Length: 465
Image (cartoon, rainbow, N blue to C red; front, top):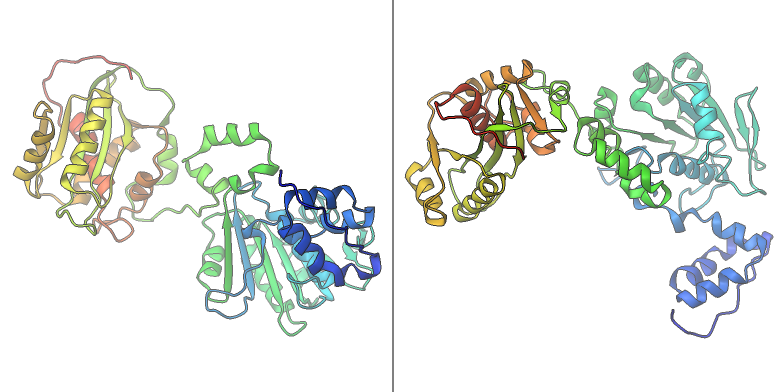
């Protein structure tokens, strides 16, 4: 601990709290550890209450209102997308508190009328108002608003009023008017479009009405429109961003079970996971194909889809490993795809995976520079058995029979491969995935096809990983 002469505590009488904010925060944020410890130990009750009410000291970056929207103008909608437990409710409650009390830097004026909208009135009451991180809990004793459940409203001492609305009753939003609004978990509202539209007509008080939307990520059409709206400001955070306030066992257990899966990426990472209508694979199909265990395997291959060039802007080199079980089911074991690699780099990576899994062969596409591919691999390790494959069919036609194996339950993913699964679910009839070459998909198709569609007469060798 740094040893410096302790500073004298700053007297903060209740009447001068707001005028002392700058001086108090300067001491707390820029003083030494010894200074802060001394200040903490000598605080009066009202000073302690003031400090704990300074949200700007404790807020994560995603919980702080953005300066501007995507178009550089003051935002109209602040869209906060986060994983479970990322602190969305606390941020919403603190933002409402700041609007009602006119607290800078989160508000430039006091809002007279505020709308609180949840999926149901019960959700608004139990989570947004009375919850552990709700509006009532973030207020100090002297500033806490009066909550009247029967009237469905909060009223502050300065006259600000917040009213409760249910998204299940969009018509209830017809008539009232507001300076600002907080909508929670909008992506799961059953009547989200109707409720959102009615709310927009009510945001008509003050010089610049605004709304905060806190929600987990779902492939919702309204959410996508808001993300594309240049007047929207977006902040995003995964569950792990708020790890300090979460039970360690919760994070450990949910990460072990759901990390990388569609549900985990949506609920923990706050990602919007969507399907392409014309894709051969779907998220639901891939979730059904997961396996936590690997049986004895007869044959293991590492498939390589080399890039056509070796420049930094070249396509990635797809490297996917799979194994064939005695019952004919193929297990996807690894995705070691590498981007921006030279031939020597990706060849080393593929051979390393081949050695680690004790695989039977490297299945390598040789449509592009076949002799070069074999030469590079042989220069690193001449003992690696290379099985060259060549095709004249399109990527889509080549992938169709492999996708059919998935639909039949004959391919399993051992764990989760987020990047590979993204490519699979966006792989279009054009042969592209997200507008790019589907290098991971190509390698996967070669691996599965070599095991389940192009069976060779090699004798079975049962191995357990």
